[in-house]
Picture 1: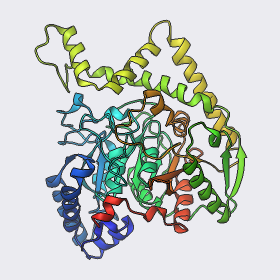
Picture 2 (picture 1 turned 45 degrees about the vertical axis):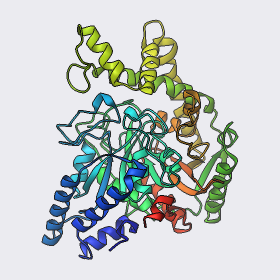
Picture 3 (picture 1 turned 135 degrees about the vertical axis):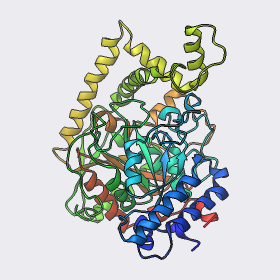
Picture 4 (picture 1 turned 90 degrees about the vertical axis):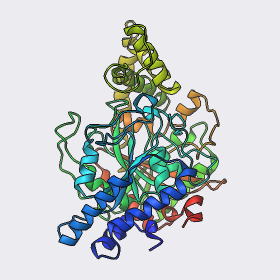
Length: 492
């Protein structure tokens, strides 16, 4: 079969279980596509054909024996921030270019237990710091819709592999929008779960109180299948919450859009820099949901101006602490011929980290330093609580909150945005992480340059099933999620 990459996760599962094709055939199909196309997209950092084929053979044996579970044999790509035993795990950095992980992240362990096949590790902004995937040590990944544009970030590689049909779905992480924004830029569905819903064990840390793993795929249904695998409590992660996990696939039709109250924050639609065509597509998608029976309710979110400064104090402060472990002593990059210990530290870190990472370490170290800790970091944490309360007040009136996922569509590669311009591009996503809420991106059309536009729906705590259900029903009534990127169409 030549069009296996066009099948949904459900169709792939049924095809494997019914013997229409084997996992080895499916895996080889994707490996051939990667070999043919990925030199243009540059989404994979490491391809693991031997591992993939051995896992595929194991899945085929389990299917043949009649004891395979639903997703056995389906290929998957992991963001290169998830530790994967025996495979290089770089976090997109020179600092970890030589790091072969001795253990698996819990998300990887769960994927293996489900019989999923690891195709490889995909590109990302260095240490998940960035919105374009251009800060990677391995160079920029390109947007499959137009190779002159970025795929977003930091999970840009995860978005690009799915948009180019180089993997059926992928794992990503979201610290301030790093699943939702690239999903928006690449025309995909991407879910950022409630903080604590998916284990962070084995995820290379950026900002520990903000990082959260989640699925990226074409549709809400495909995301639901991956959420069924990766969600749940993990004793190895102290921030993981011991709360019953939904069956996300079974619940896809559990929430009725009819009567659903969708909050429209007027402040979000008056943000400077919101592109007219993005605003138009988002408003059209809300009109569609209204036609399906939803009720649009205007709400106030009064802390919008505080989102960016609050996030860019807290996240760099945590990054400064987390990245202090990369000192050239224990593992990772080490400079050559240091003259003494201080020289080893200075040159290993100066040479091993890229510009954006160094910028955030400096900001974070400054915010945590004596004399500034109370003035900056403590104050930011207080404002963070006000942002959370702002959302909770809105949820007293509505079921979900709607917003654009990003104020613009994808940027051109090499656009050389200033750090401030790049940070302001996250205005719609940051607050969700600060509050620990779940949110989802759904593709809702194209802009005037044929680049995807995304709608973001923000839910109350633990409402992942509801978000997936709403988007699933929207996708039953639209076809935006089925539209293919240019490079995928050319290589159908």
